[in-house]
Image (tube, rainbow, N blue to C red; front, side, top):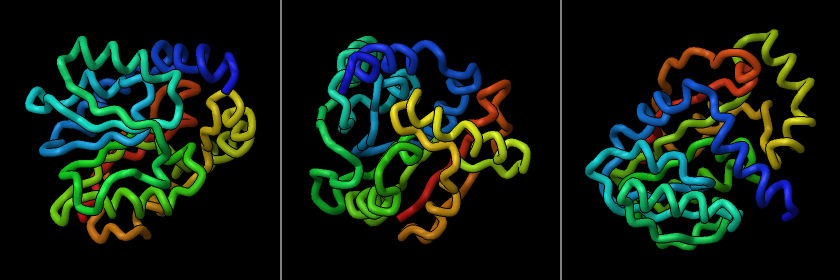
Length: 203
């Protein structure tokens, strides 16, 4: 990890988010309940939008430099966080541990999406739900063309974030038998390259 990924990139995450994201975060988190795990908590942006009933969560992220920003948000929003350092491909939790698992902008940058989805399925309780706000390959031909053009640069600037993964399909073919996707309008400007994929998958 260098100066960019430890200092500049966390700052960018907190200060360059599209104006539509707060609304989308609220939509993603509104039905979260019970024992909660957030994978890839990053700088803790979701901590501003959890339902008021959520006072405790478990969080895991592979980048320690993100944690200070997330800790400040946790304190400001009166949420107790049980912190773990690690990746979604190998979650250090027992089977059937959580009622809700949350991810936002995670699946675009993990090494193995299928393995992460399998791990989420494993740690969810039998009636648990996976709440996701991701981005992926656009349904629009013209946007897909630009996603492919800029994917290489984006992976460098955004520390491994892929624009061209077909996240919707990857969720649909995973172990989750019941996945619901919400209709979301494309973001504006250059943010159109990050087409939102919002939904919930039930175990």
